Length: 280
Image 1 (cartoon, one colour):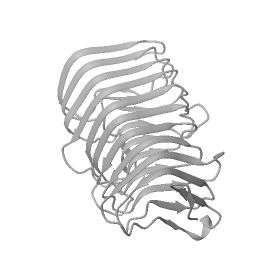
Image 2: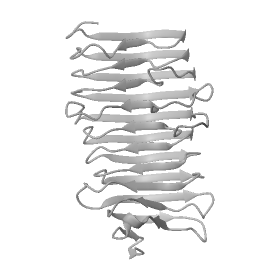
Image 3: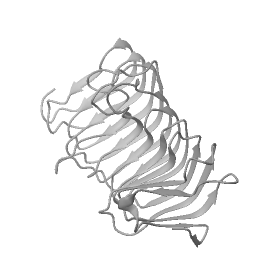
Image 4: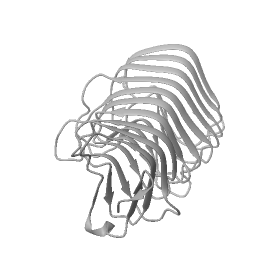
């Protein structure tokens, strides 16, 4: 694809390939629209760089595979003007080979100054089975992964099941996560520097913690309107990792004997308020 060229795919049924569209060598594409697309036994649908607009609507990927370019619906770097991803269904076929890479059904990727998007939404999704095999490397497979620079976003109305790492790993500033139900992750949410304002979160049977809070450059508290914790009460509500952030959970619903937090030695000045009471 050439610079400025738009891409539209509609009413498509693709099967048995390792990648759909490889456009990570093209900078400044035109608008990218995928609607009513079914993938079977497929690798990533599109791997790309910047675009003024990305629209994904009514996409399903069944028996999904991984490849050296990732997996899922979208892996995007560089400047994105506007992203709308709605009505998504993903079911992984088998475990991902243990690799020094990150995988997610949607990955807003990159760590440079040009890797930005400040108008994005991911809503109405069902993502299952993003699992990396055990091995020498960290099992880095998330449901949704959002790197820094992807700010002012919304993740809403979704289900995530059975992932190796975080259900949602969000480093974007001023993002909102609400009405999500996550089960079978290492941690349901991993919230970083300035991911600050969230609604109702349901977390079921995490292997490590319901929420990890990390990073120190955020401004103001991380606020969650309602968090519902299910499963083993020895898995903490919040695990503070190298951070002095303040966390406020306005309504916590949890089983009897629930461990409320853990904090490493770099997190001794962190703060946690639950149901109106300061507990850390």
